Image (cartoon, rainbow, N blue to C red; front, side):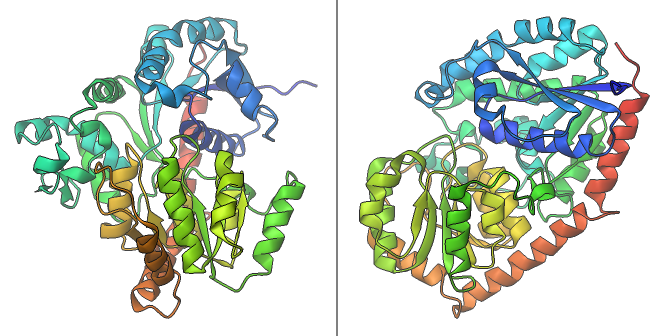
Length: 456
């Protein structure tokens, strides 16, 4: 007998891994709360080829729109063109898909940057939940853009005003202009306009959803400020990482078991895990310096290097292993991991916080820059690899070797303090997602609200 679905949520993520993963994790959390909620997860045909084989609950299904965008394999080469295509070419096939879907759609959940999805929902009288997959603090920076304009602090020119600190963004501790998202830098105005348009449409949605842990320092005051200013409900469902299947070995391949077996053989807290994201790459020259510095340090490492694995292996020495991919959360929670060298994407940072692992930060773009600031300045659970964004100079292997040795030295007083603070944040995070925690309570309330929405 076919299950009866009184409610139908359509999820429309921005087509990038850092956006698709948290939205899928949220959909799995929602799906686990009721068998009567059907979730249709909309992706391009190309993305179906990339993630279609992943295990998911029976009440989540994929639906596709045609490949109207530049391929995921080349989008980094022309970001402006890719963003333009996302904003202008996805809306029509999404509408056509909605017309074909059965049962009728109860609610749309769309990435905040897909402002056109809010319009689609409004025109069809379908409620829209806007999902912001970065820190709430970063949303607040965009939301208070006019304050930066009024104070004549934009655009940010790193060599002129980068070191200036501002303390007028409500709920936020003081921040250097250089630590704002890179869209505020002077050569990024075109992309900034698109982001601001996404923010402006949030007021026309029916919910704003944050992938934040409310109790984390830097987030709570900002969220409370936004709740006082915005007329729509604001929900916090963080962290949107796959903590719910951390003990699941059903999908473990031989490669997985190989690196996990290697970790089992290493002393506690002795391995530096390195992963610099799935999308934007670091220059080959800088990667070579990283590899040489790592080799000179003698520190044990597990490095996810994707396309450059074989080339870098020759430089890196025998103290660690390189893999093209790994189950990151499982790795971070392994007792042999003592640190995470990260690009500071929000998903990776939340996984590190969940695992209680200190960070070496190497942000590349966008929200990664303020996140690095939160990690180093506010939470005090990490150090920066590179002191400044924007200057083209390489971080040399000698600096890397010295930094990595200090960072992984368990007797180092600063490191001990970072570990203590990281464990505090881990406890806060675990309480949020425990039964009766605010994340769990918010998810239950949201599902109850979906069931109250009329069908369309």
